[in-house]
Image (tube, rainbow, N blue to C red; front, side, top):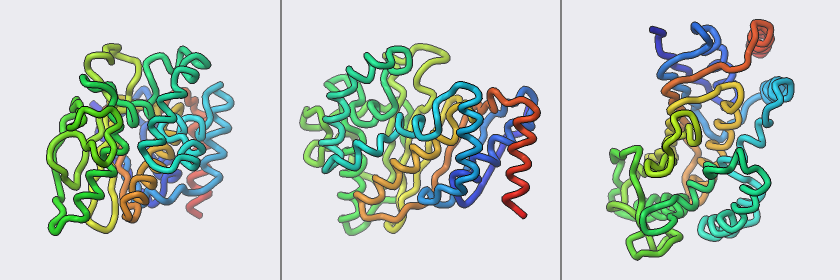
Length: 279
């Protein structure tokens, strides 16, 4: 049995590089219970690491880092939407076209669709609007709460029955400063290997900074890892900005991590890059 991996770095790129090298060093390039902590979700890291990742992704015929990141957080649409409710409505409206253009990749949905249109039993719920509303409301209270446990299969339901989960239709239990965002939907996601590998997102704050935990049941660290980190970090920054908080720690937990596609020469090149950046 392999020992778990625990990585901590100040930025996204260095954290990804250290994580993939640590996983690649394990038997069969696989590791259980890999925890990657990024001290600031606002720090992207060195451009050379992104270029190296994209070069490998191109060699393997895989999506670029930015393309993967956009499946979690579509930055161009966010930039032209006034608020999370309008953003969710726009994305839900264009999803049928996204599915038509890429039926294989988007057949069961996208991560962002689950964030803004989670398939609850009484209609879709905009979890992004819900999280921002709950945190903002709690920050305005005299004694903001600091922790709440959540289940990975939580199904949020809008209290007033509305589908968008906006500020006047906040779903779920009483507001707390630790808010869960499930991605997995147990009635639909029955494939053992398919979408979604990201199970849930959890947000916490200390009244000054926002912190995020992302839990993956399985993660392909080469194919998706850096794009996942970047997409979740951009989501983190958006939530923090809407709530008037600073960007804090991002923690990514992978039940099983796989340094997929890499040959020995690829690992050597990544290690040389890591060594060069530390000189």
